[in-house]
Image 1 (tube, rainbow, N blue to C red):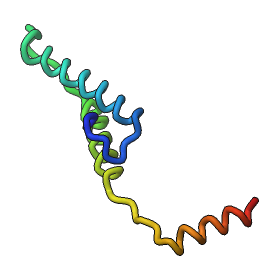
Image 2 (cartoon, rainbow, N blue to C red; image 1 turned 180 degrees about the vertical axis):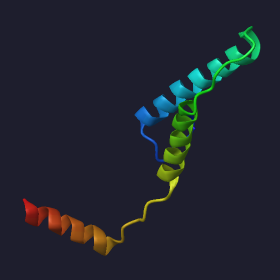
Image 3 (cartoon, one colour; image 1 turned 135 degrees about the horizontal axis):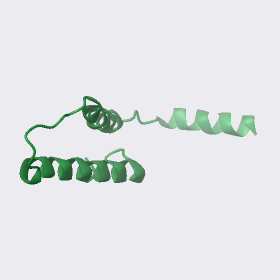
Image 4 (tube, rainbow, N blue to C red; image 1 turned 90 degrees about the vertical axis):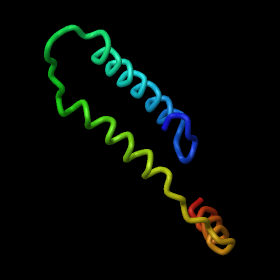
Length: 82
């Protein structure tokens, strides 16, 4: 998700990359380096990745393109407000 530029800000892409690396590193640690018998996984650890995926797909939805008439109306409204 951090590699894709579709509709994401640079901050969002950076956070996706950082958290993705942290989660991947922790998974690697638990899989290959952890010698204990059991470990606890808190449900809160699954909330952030789900929120990141939802945010990614929500931002990918295409925005409606304005027609020339709509653009002219917005410009007119901005000029009237000033």
